[in-house]
Length: 202
Image 1: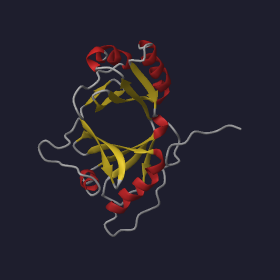
Image 2: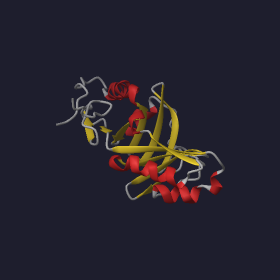
Image 3: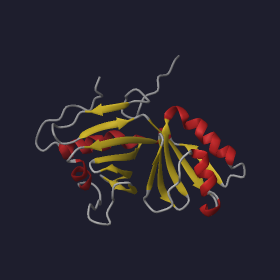
């Protein structure tokens, strides 16, 4: 029997899948093309940041909430000793092996976590307003600025918000909560109009 990998919402794994939304509210898509590593450091990162950055091919951010972008890479600061690294899916296993080979003493460890998360991209003029309805999200000075990420609760579930551009957000949700989160977003955007079922565009 041959098993075909699928995304959290049933799309082809490794692609970006458009999801039905009420007209004009926002553009919603599942990003099943994002590979993801969790890097953790067992020691103070002053001693590991440079070799760890070299191993993943991108500088690791050193400040709370900061993200760092690079060639096909995105690094998110989670804590003083942990980061999420986005990479192409087909490089995920090799990249994790490269990090772990660089630290045979396990001062830094890389784990593949692509299967754990569903990444939803929300864009358009109403994207920030939709997220504010379910999370504490400040757009004032000192709030979650472009180029920053935050672990928080959205619609009552744990999420990671990544502010990529003025009206572009990435939201990471546990795989098992993806359908609930997408349905919640659509309900917030409905504004009295009927919404099509959540299906992938062909």
